[in-house]
Amino acid sequence: DINVAWVKGIEYSEDFSLSAPISKDDVCNYIYPMMNNVTDFFQVIPSEEVLELIDKNTFAEQALGIEDLEDLCES
Image (cartoon, rainbow, N blue to C red):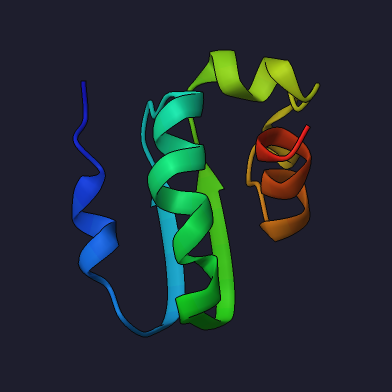
């Protein structure tokens, strides 16, 4: 498992990009809330299981932006 709790310590970032086998719980509990601290570019490529939950299964669709994370975490 990858510990992504460290992102809670990020207070400001222009860009954020993370590709790792991150679970839905970690995406929604740690990554999604910090989107408000990123000003320019934000994307996450989580685990294949998370991508399958929102039907993002082609390579071009794997980079999730803020709207994708809203779909994942607020539904």
